[in-house]
Length: 171
Image (cartoon, rainbow, N blue to C red; front, top):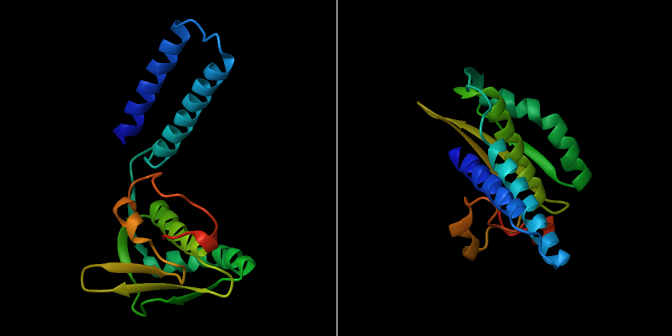
């Protein structure tokens, strides 16, 4: 969380420094600098958006219900892409203590990633599995998979290119 705010402070300092330095004679260079500072500012805002704005409220929630609530809208999007979403939800339910909004966003994001990785005619399988002390959410698609050279960077934000479903080699 603090990384985004530290970067924001550095960006503000850079902007103040740029304002104090006489403007470049070459407006093309000045424009390029301004464009990059604006791009950095956008990336910082994206990073900060991952930080909860308030205290996280955990509530008892059934993972199966969250999946069921998200399926109508996601199913419509999948249908438009020619992708089918199937579910296999644990029959005993999957009760967990969780931030309800955060869990809904995770479910939606994982299924959406599956749709982006899938081509028309493919299927996404969404499963929930309950064990003694935990529940597992599994989202599997039939996309091309993760290229070996991308695996070390899979959890590094902004490190993987995002193209179309047909050439999207990860997630």
